[in-house]
Length: 314
Length: 279
Image (cartoon, rainbow over all chains, first blue to last red; front, side, top):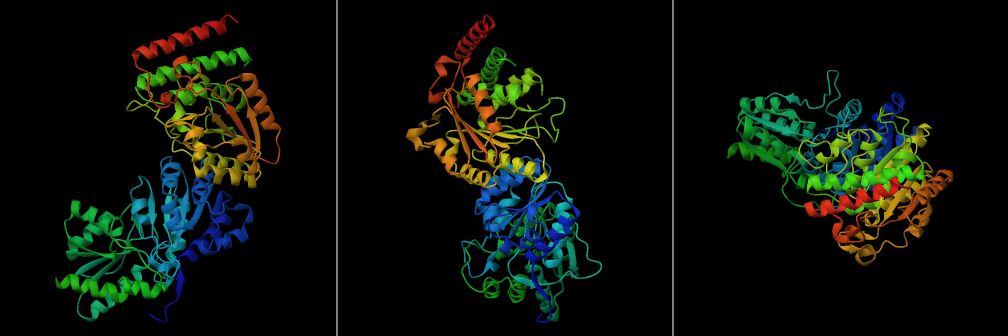
């Protein structure tokens, strides 16, 4: 895949915000001293009067965002996933989600692909935290195209949304004329009959690569991109589970509480199916180059391929 | 309202605080009673709000950062006409819009859901910032507990408000001196409160008797005249004010009166009301 274009999903966020800012004066962007990293610096340059740098104070930032929303603005509060979902969890829960305020949380640098900064900054628990909050919508885009589409969809939707972005440049997989983003609607990227791979975020590209490898060996894998983890596209997942009999979930997140758990919650009630969860297995990450970490933790194309194959051979 | 009318209203609000918490068999009388006078002053003198149009974008905003004293706020809103005073006895009952802590989605006139300490002030800062960004002239008020300011988020918010010169923001600290575990100075002293806010570029106004309407008026008038920085009004108050056996007793922070205590409290407040009527 060396000839494929690569961009970080956070860049899609930053670019979409500029478009949104031009269309709607209510759009304001908040940061906690990470505007360069969250890619909102572009918005700041274009609309300095509508960019609010709160300094290194994420809890206050979430509260200010709540107050702005209560006064009719549409705030996008940006930070790293660790601080947006982790440090400010209770502010997100009590000041934003409980009152149903129209705040969008742009959380970049999610997962182990943060890389060299190591475990303190590699948030593999944010989806679990956000999933447990009633009324929270969670979107984890798979590439820069989807990230921009998700950001625009979040702006058009009324209510709290958690947008999860990554630091690492990842392959563009959604650059096609018929691409359509709809909150809560999964996308079948590849049909297959032997197994369904349900993936989210940067692992969608890994799963497509794995499906190619499996196909070369005569294994037909269906690949579904679940960009919206909550609300989950249960109809699509149930139908796929019934079609293929076996399901694998793939995520750059803990296997506790993330996409894998959401899929299991759904299937155990509606279509009991064997599920293999690929992700971070209840451990902290470590420092290292992002690509090497994804390989070590089995989240690149080879890792997904190996684990799906082993699952099918069980 | 003149001073006597405000005092009478504050007494009515005290009765509804005691009545509702007794009915709920749970709640926070101490801090509700210490703030009964400032709730009254805010809703009957200071705030530009209209019960007929509770969502008016141009209205002044009030955020009860010390959300556990909701009964005092609810009583003020009810007497102002946002909802029937009879609703007060449904406090904390299943199905009531009067939750244990303020719920902006359920109760007319509540501008922000709150209750987790330290959070309301940030929302108030956001509302004040929105007014500045859009050129709106509304003002924003938020009431904090003196124990609450032990929360770090309060100082994140104060730093931001000072930095952005939010002179449309008035922070109020109900300095009744007590928190659940005892005297605030013994638990983890927040003193000096005024100097701390001043260090964060806020204009501090100390009020010697925060249960006195004249002193409240002077403080809020001063805050209105301050330009270029937010104001903080530090009210020295009596926790449990108006019910003698609750006054300055930390254990009345978060328990409801039993039937006997309820009768005694109501008799005392009735007498106080009668005395005001003879003035």
